[in-house]
Image (tube, rainbow, N blue to C red; front, top):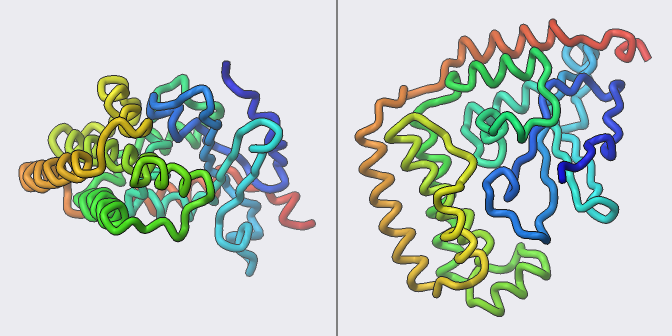
Length: 258
């Protein structure tokens, strides 16, 4: 049953929320009964943050943690930071523009404008971002790097011999990248490979088999990237226009004077 995002108390004084969607395992179709609700949002901050000296929430990110009460979390980005993350094709942020319609909780006209122009962020930078992530996770798994993991994840490593949660993410990202290079489609909802991804998450795959599969997919991704027709760079002119247009469209001058 969908969660009521009213739990996040979306105070308009913080800014105008123009787009909020469900991301994480529930958007990927790899959720389990224990999975939490992860949301990402885009905010047009009060006008003073664009014309004055303030930085919105210091670094352009606002996190609202409701995990203890509702097992849910919202990460909201100022429009400028969101656009910059999308330019780099951040794998945790770009899915917000490629969700199924039922996975969106808020879509304003401005949010729809971002979705309609999502191809502006498409470029061969996808390769360095997504493949770089996969390579780093392979390295971490092989070297048993658990230093930055929480206690639950360390327990998974102890039980299965490697971080099965990140291992599942790695295979998913490689499959998505290959599809994207060959078709231009960024398929967030992983209905076709859900069972495989859950098997990895549940520790069914031995580490050596996972490493072998990652290596095969990395080579496949390299070939797919060479065959792709993706532009070299994002459409920075259009993205800059989106930033200016949305900031002008959703100002909050009353709060700016407070």
